[in-house]
Image (cartoon, rainbow, N blue to C red; front, top):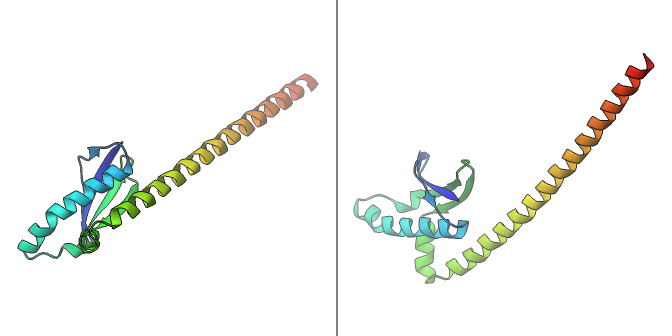
Length: 134
């Protein structure tokens, strides 16, 4: 799947026009985290506030999937990496929930399709009966 890493600075968004092909959301998060960590010292050196920035990770349809505040880099440094395992669990839970929702949505769409086909056949039968009565 292709992920896009839009950089938000306050109210301003710099869109990522290229994106990256990555296997899953966890890898996308880790890529964004790595980039934020690499940018952190550069931002401080130039006198910019890293805490005012975040990455908004989106999919190829433009749907926002996750926001990574640069503050998480500082939080991770304070806790010595303890946030990453929790984040992996959280991402896995969210991914599992999305799979369940997608399966439910597919089932719902299939039921609607069957209902529509049944209604269409009923209309065709009724139309045929009306033709015969004329």
